[in-house]
Length: 126
Image 1 (cartoon, rainbow, N blue to C red):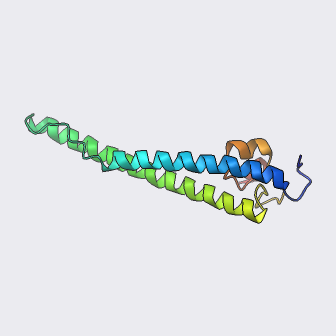
Image 2: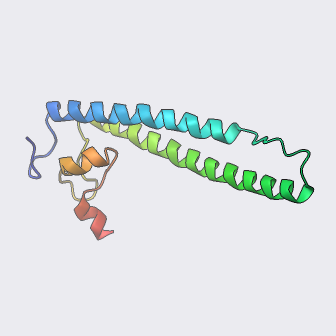
Image 3: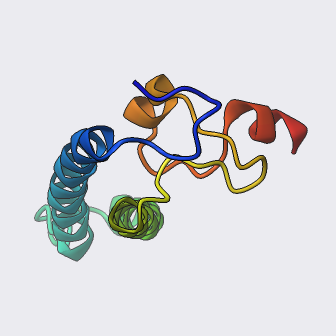
């Protein structure tokens, strides 16, 4: 088991992290598709025969919802990109090394936030 004094995680550890990251990517891509499909929805709830006031409120709500979904999609795309960058670091055997302190990021943190590039120590210094 790697400790904070070693320069990198073992190949066995990296393989374990790789599986975690790949599973997160798969789930994140699925979630992104759900967000995009909600964004593409035309929100047609059959309000053509209702009062113009209600329709105006509904259209405003639909616009806000589309904006929220768009922001979610952008955030999800960034998350996927960060996870894919983590895979590159795994392949380069630099995964789990804090980019500020140079120490290993704790396994518990990487399991929760597999795309992390900063240790808690470095995060607290920010």
